[in-house]
Length: 146
Length: 202
Image 1 (spheres, rainbow over the protein chains, first blue to last red):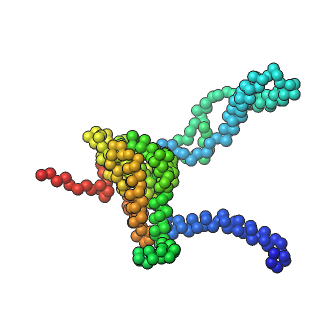
Image 2: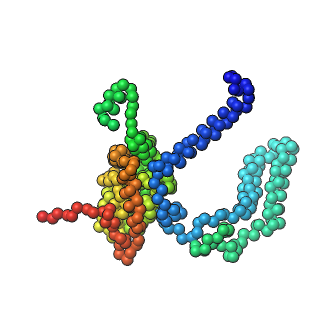
């Protein structure tokens, strides 16, 4: 160690942090400078259009998906994962000790709790509401529904 | 740089190059084709990218599913008039510099379907084709040969200030995408791109 790092033990650390940051930033900066110098950005309507395999899009595409999609995820978990785990359990059910049965029951209870929650919330009614359909192609909307 | 001096320096173990050569070397050896196939030639293109013919040797195996990331369009197969606007549109969505290989008899001239009412008689009527490959379909070796020919062509590109390739691309970008008319595509061809020699009949 030279005298500089002996005076301030954090100096070495600072050098390391600086090097680490620069290793990440330098390629990005080089790419940026290189693009500015040699690049040929020529945006137009077609190039900036939404990529739809060469076809023109007929609806507005920059809408976010509904955040309520998590409900489908939960119900999927309840039905699908339950079956997935119960099938192997069923094949060895007779030879399982009492502790394992209790564990399985806790697992089923947790999933059933989700099902009861979804049922009570009325999420099992699979109805399409026409008032919440996709946005019109001419009017971009901030919030769209599935 | 003088070729003789370059050769002498190489004998002394010093490798010299220019930024232009370096740039073209990078471009030529990292061609990313757009992943789309139109007809039977696409099967040969797929075979070319697989292990037997190994397109990866030429750095061109990274088939991209989006035109934003591609710089090589391999028009592999028959271009019907219904498909032609989409092909031109995809070409326009690719960033410059971009290159086109017309693969097979159909893509370069309409091939066996040339007399058909619905087949485009060569994609070079709408987009600038760098390399034409004849054959029906061309063997994978022919596509490899086309890639090598394209690499030789890229090696002739200039960087600054003329930027030949980009200027050409800019000119082409201003051309409209053809639309479906009542009988044919409108326009049936772009005159700046497609001007064949007049047929001499004796």
